[in-house]
Length: 407
Ligand SMILES: Nc1nc2c(c(=O)[nH]1)N[C@H]1C(S)=C(S)[C@@H](COP(=O)(O)OP(=O)(O)OC[C@H]3O[C@@H](n4cnc5c(N)ncnc54)[C@H](O)[C@@H]3O)O[C@H]1N2
Ligand code: MOO
Image (cartoon, rainbow, N blue to C red; front, side, top):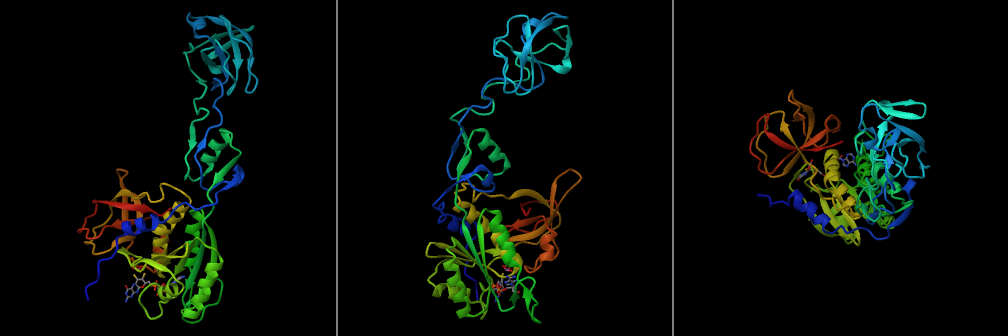
């Protein structure tokens, strides 16, 4: 039977993101608790940095004109230290001892480096003539009061927190962390640490998907493992509802087997299905829909399929819910193929690949020999996913390709 044309990966992501408006109820947090959170409002600088012209080095604040003749010297008139300026303008023939970060007195137009100076009986000479403007950080060099400092939607890392602090914000208004409930299904699954039955395996998707969610700034509620049984799944979905999750991620049971019951279970709970099955390998049986206000992402059970779907769909959804305007940005990079590859068929392929550099320093992507979507060792050995478009013709080693980095 000919298969109906499946929704493409980009279209699927666009369908998800067009529904993902920033969550309500932003919160105000002290800087020290804002790491990893997402700014909910544009931030303006509350001050000018530096507030006055300051020295970038330890040395002497001088007037260059005083050093135009070889052997010239200036009289040491005082000191300017960080936090304690000299307090008077520099007169012709004078200089001031100055330290890094200290205000440059009016009238001085350069810093003579300590290493380039000779101090003798209260007089300062130069072994290298000072140049106008040299080693002076002018007022506002970093930022001006009222100028935009950070845009809403930006993820707050150490650098962003430093800029927020320097521009005198002690608290930041950040997006609420999306709540992600994770529900695994499968009679064969037990939690890590539990002794499995003879044909049982350990559930590894919960922890991987939780990792993606937390890395994207979300709070995770792991509901655990439910049986391949409509009544048990119903119990799980009731728990998901009680968890007040913004996003429900289900794991497994998304395909067409007799025990793949998540779609019927979600439908019985009232999910509006947006799409099921997309042109992606691995990850074809992906489910996307809405259960009330909550988003539902039904990830396929094969561990690498759920991993790739979490990377490609869950992480951008969570970023979009926090107001990140770059949530859907293409993060793929150019590389060169390490081996010959046959033509690709009807799904965009995300092949686990090792990255290396050739002798010219070019990035080479070499797909792992085995691409079965159950193989975690191949995933851990890989640094990237090599993207192959639908219908891509056969390609040779050295041909250009695109990759998505995994770490
Ligand atoms: N006749 C067809 N069969 C399958 C199709 C298809 O189109 N026609 N699609 C295949 C693809 S592609 C995938 S991917 C899988 C996805 O199936 P499900 O989402 O229904 O997943 P399950 O059947 O529940 O499990 C598949 C596989 O993954 C293991 N699994 C499930 N959950 C976990 C977990 N939490 N941790 C670790 N491993 C898990 C499970 O034991 C199975 O081995 O369907 C194909 N079949
Ligand atoms: O999409 Mo399945 O995810 O190929 O293994």
